[in-house]
Length: 415
Length: 225
Ligand SMILES: Nc1ncnc2c1ncn2[C@@H]1O[C@H](COP(=O)(O)OP(=O)(O)O)[C@@H](O)[C@H]1O
Ligand SMILES: [Mg+2]
Image 1 (spheres, each protein chain N blue to C red):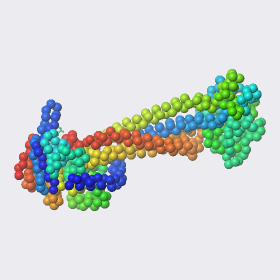
Image 2: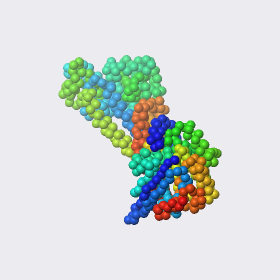
Image 3: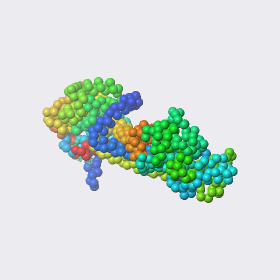
Image 4: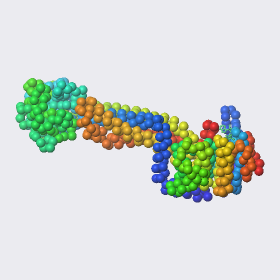
């Protein structure tokens, strides 16, 4: 008889697992719903934690991709910048002007040089008296015959318009994000630093830097920002075939002692420690936040279990398998994770774009369509899974407590 | 019919320096379908004994045999299965799950036993109708009177057609009229379902209807008739 029931038990358990789980799910929902305020607060706590992780994570991630992107421009080239410039990825964000003629000197005196292009990089640019906290708008002056070397084969949006053709007239091409924000279209006349400029094209590119950039002929840039002085802050140097960037950089640094010549590797190395630190901080913050969520979920669940000891003891007495009780508790905490995670991802993504908007002064409306770029879906899934797993783990100790509750103890402690 | 037999069953508790003998060398036996009552004052060891017999607790010494199997040799999993399939429990405090309806409380036992959902539903409805709660199926425990709660608990105990129902002071929380109804219900079940009922109570009135009557005092069990 006992043997037969054993067989039945196993047979039915195997065959009814699915029904079993859907039932279990409703059961869990009701148990959670029974303490509405507490469950809501716990879910909110988890949601806030997720919000924070998503917002901080995606914001820093965005900055690091932008920084990494900078190296896409100027790829294959040695960048020559003044020793007293402050650079990010070899792009001077402050100081370090020198004479444009240095480009020609380098070209003439160093045999490894195939081409040397002087570039004027300006950030932030101000127009309409708007002041930016973080550099988001850029301007770049490049000699018209050398565009390709710097920005590669970037097309114009819709194939409309053309790149500036003449050094001294006032034609510019602009990044798509700038165009959207200010409603600038091809043919439009814009004011930059008190100068009238004509938009002749909108760049079609994924690079954040180019998207926020006004590209113009070098002469024009010098005229607008430095009243015609022939200053630049970058010289982009292309090595001759068969010559490595390292050799070329060494040669340049030997010739001109007031500049740094940075190869692509060196540029990456410069930024690596910063990126690594950002990564580490990010990871640290995430870990702390997740541990706090874990503690929150664990505390709340331990309390809820201790209130429901009678229920668990009853389940034990009527012969529920340990795994049933265990799953009941784990499923409850996982549900908290699922709800908190979903809410958190929604809040977090919104926070991330609000932050982006605040930091860049770009209107919020413009960020909405790019929400999946700012918070990539894969990142959302990653964080969501992490939250659910954390809540699951938070349920383990309470679940073990629950399975240990025996009717013999309950009857005494409560009566 | 399930045979239950205990041999010198003893359970002691250590409270500080002293030792309490809650159940003292009890020899108890049921080997045919009976309505068995265990009568004793509060604190005499009724609950402790029933928890031992129902395999919800382990003895300090002595043995419990179910169908001539020494239960001390069974694993936790096997003991659980016996509780699920062969024993129905009715508690003094009903112990219904508060978030499940009457129907779901009854169905849960069957669901744990792996019955199909259709089977669960049909049988739960029938059981609840049999205990007079056909119109209370979807009520939650807190929407039921205590008498009704105990009826649901009895229906739940019957869910997997157990051979034995163990009822620990099932009328302890009830008024005398409801108590009488509940006792009557358990008695009917014993007679109609051919299910052994082992009931603990301090209510002397049970004496008249019990087939077998034990009294318990300071953990010592005595067969009266
Ligand atoms: N877990 C326990 N720890 C200590 N003493 C206990 C425990 N459980 C029961 N007892 C003692 O055992 C005796 C019998 O208790 P119990 O079986 O609950 O009696 P009844 O159910 O007849 O009222 C009592 O004296 C009680 O104090
Ligand atoms: Mg008792």
